Length: 196
Image (cartoon, rainbow, N blue to C red):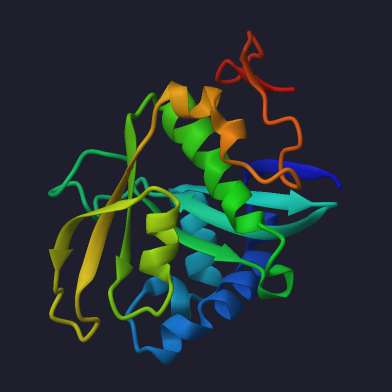
C-alpha cells in the first residue's frame, strides 16, 4: 500500500469537499455550527490556500485530511498550534487512516517542523464520540467554554508532545500499523526522524 503524507493542493479540493461533507454528517445532525460541516468548494479552496491542509493519500486517493490553522481562532487563549477540519473518508472506517495522519502531523509538523511542545484542537461536549477519542489519543481538556451559538459546551484540548514519545512509539502501536515500531534519529532532510 502506497501511503503519501503531503500538503493539499487546489486540485484536491473536490475530493476534500466530498470527504469532509460525508465525514461531518454527525456534526450537522447535532446542529453544531462548524464551518467544515457545511463548507462549499470555495471554502475548501480557501482553507487549502490560507492554512496548512494536510492529506493522507493511499494508492493515489486522498483518504484523510487535517488542517493546521494559520488563523487567529484561539490566539487569545494560547499560542500553541491549533488543528481543525479533521476528516476521514467514511468508506475507509476502521483502516486507521485518521490516526495515521494525526500521528504524522503531530510528529513531523507540530514537533518536528515547528518545534512545538504541544498541539491543541477544539471539540464539542455533545458529540457522542469525539471527546473520548481524543482523550484516548492523549489529549486533555484545558478549557471549557460556551460560545452561546447553540453548540453548547466546547472543549479546547491539548496534547503534549516530546521526542521521547517518538522514540518509544513502537510500544503503543498495533503491529498491523507499524510491525517494527522503531524510530531512529537520522539526518533525513526532514525533521530528523526516520522510520525503519
